[in-house]
Image (cartoon, rainbow over all chains, first blue to last red):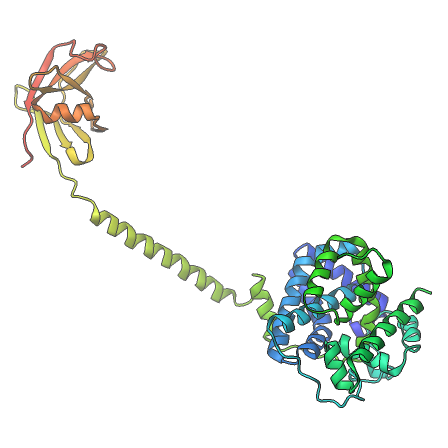
Length: 191
Length: 227
């Protein structure tokens, strides 16, 4: 099955099925899962860690966790991609802390977005994402600064201090943008 | 502190998922999440929503060596069966070699198993009936039946040590054919050490019921040092 041709819902179901087989120790399912999601997970951990060797180590850890915890996912019944991406991002953030790597700021100028493509372009139509309508609508309510802060934190793994330096803004202001941005998102998503 | 205010819980959950909750606070929150379903539920809410922020990230194919490394770490490697078979063979051969060398060293470390005394029990005709070997170091007595005379039905030949100045001590039933090997008790060893002769009596099946010879003493033979 070609994942690019699948709708997000079908993709979710496929991932759920593969995770269920992983929980039953089916290594072929793990290989199929790796083929489907390792590119996006690898890109995510690479953006946070910014060192390919460390990102490769993190990706190994992520798939070992997925294999070992697949049974827990089926019990939780969440979105499989969100579950796997969280494992990947949290592992990368842990590695940043444990390896005591000084945060490396992105070379891009502050005004450049943390993402690789414009959200509305055809190239950004990520098959692993569920229908973006509501989230797109809610993100549209945020200021540019708020959106940029959230992207730098989520995608690049930047801390408050990193973001303040990148954006040339006071730390307190950055914290306020992030806090208000998250609050606006919650109000919008749950309204 | 674990706040009860749902808004504070939600703010912490959102910052945890976003990645801006760092350091000890992050560790504490992870432990709290693991044991608190409501906190876990709020985290999953944010995980499913905030992943939209990564929609512009371009997927990147990981290097080819990452997948085999994952398989190795999970002990799921299925490739290169010939190499794995060779490794299994090499491992088994190594174990055998180690065990063999250890056994050889142990064998060579043992004291030489030599008889400390022997006796030949012969008939009047001169034919050997039994050959006895006493292995004092190993506490064993070995008896070889050679050419036994006809014996009465329902009877056994019993061997006795004849210690000086003491009553005979039974050394057990002698074999009617072939060889027998028995472990000597301390009393039997002491009796043999004080004996210059052994004797054979005819006893009921299973041996003397009294612990002393009850039947006819049919043979007496000297104990001697092995040649």
